[in-house]
Amino acid sequence: MTLRSNALVRVYETVPDTSEEGTLSRLWACHVGSTRRVELVDAYENAFGEEQAYSSVRLAGRRVAFVLTSATYEGEIRLKLKREVRRVDLARDHTDSAPVAGPVRLVMSRSGGVAWIEAGSVRALAPPGARTLDPGRATRDPSGAARSRRAGGRASPGSATARATALPSASRSPVGAGSKLTPLRGCRAKPWRLAL
Image 1 (cartoon, rainbow, N blue to C red):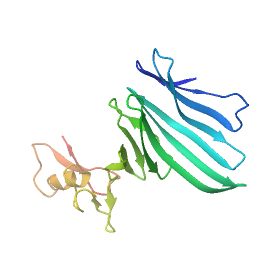
Image 2 (spheres, helix red, strand yellow; image 1 turned 180 degrees about the vertical axis):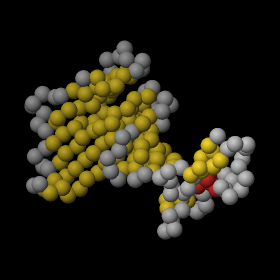
Image 3 (tube, rainbow, N blue to C red; image 1 turned 30 degrees about the horizontal axis):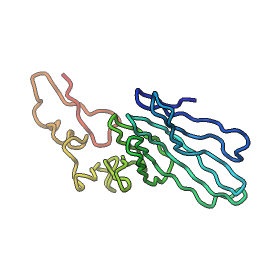
């Protein structure tokens, strides 16, 4: 069954014969118009308490990316769980990978860049591992004021707090004739809206 395809590559999975004990499915890639195929990974479950699965398969040009999850069990108890993002460059026969902490969904750019959200941060695959593109959402200090991690504790110029404090206060004269500032309901930082 074809999972992803473009003008250059087709990514598909097969279910092997029952003679291959434990293998549930196999992920393949092949160049369009060619009979040469590349085995990317197996999803399996065996009698030794090992499981492996793939998910979030993406394709851009001649690059295929997916999340690989491996687990080891003893009876019903999971002893080890490992997740990693893999990108296979079929043109260069090269594989990049990086560990991830939890389940993630991948996005892939047209040029083959791979990114995901992990623990609120945007991360990307960059050899030899992963790098953080964006450290995440704004944090709050104990007083409740929003602050940006990248701005060193001060509100960044584009933040709601900065926009709210940049507007004239209600005690000052209105911005234009016949206009007044009204607080937005439900906002903690008290941003103001110009009502005309």
